[in-house]
Amino acid sequence: MDQYYNAPYIDPLYATAPVATPPVMEAYMPSYSTFPAPMPASSSAPMSGFPPPPPFMDMMHYPVGFEPTNRQLMDAILDLKSRLAGDENKEEQNKWLQLARDCFIEFLATGMFILAALSVPILGAAGTAAGIRTIGVSFGFGFTITILVAVASRFSGAHLNPAVTWGLFLAQRIGALRLLYIPCQMVGAITGAAILYGIVHDLDTTTYPEVPFLAVNRVMPGFSRGEALGYEIIFTCLLLTVVLAVTHGKAQFGRASMAPFHIGYAVFIAHMVMVPVDNCSINPARSFGPAVIANYWSDQWIFWVGPLTGATVAGLFNGVLWKLFHGKPVKPAKLLE
Image (spheres, rainbow, N blue to C red):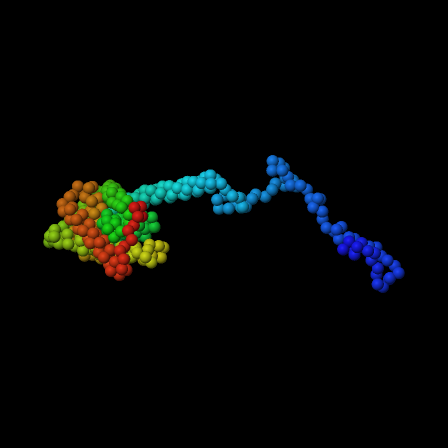
């Protein structure tokens, strides 16, 4: 090979004029001895004045190709576990903060419900809103519930009613800690009734004596306690059935949801029937708040036993229907759900 490349090159066209010998192949081949030697591991100065690129890291934060020792691998696993535990603790803390916020929303919304809805029969009784009778009171309660449910449902679910909270718990829609809504609803009802008393306590309510002061619930003349109790059970069961039906699956609350209107319709119908009977409770908080401020406790037990019994029937029956149509029991809610 060397002889071939080192021989004189003779052009066939100009055989008498030899030309220069082409360069040897080795002249074009780089010599490995010309490359700089790799820098020692102890040296930190870059070869070309630029810092070396960071090594590629794997999921365990080790350089690609690095073989960790057992000790390093265990440290990485423990570090990953601690990070996951920290995320779980933070999520748990956020759930407790959310529960506190939702309890406050229930307190606030229930107070607003008592203040707004009870103003309708009270102003009608005082003669300042002439013509407000059963249908007016029914519209007042129904529209008030519709608006408050539409606003508060995105936060706490907008129960506003201990019977609703109890029924949803029995239907396994909410966790046990959501029962804390009930004392918040009671305090909210008392607060709303107290504010209402401060506004209307000077009004003359003798124009319509059948409407007691602060529109407290009581069995009206011509009806027995048994009849009032039966109505409370039936229409609270109806209300809970509607709530359970329109707040499940694709019918969940949302901007375009019709659930607040369906719940408002149920409240409207209940009041149309029951206002002449006992002023219509279907809500222990609605009965308890005005009773505390007015110090009126006649027949108060009816407005606890009736709604809670109706809610119990609806909540338990919902589980039976679910198993009947789906072939499996209801998946129970978690503690903080």
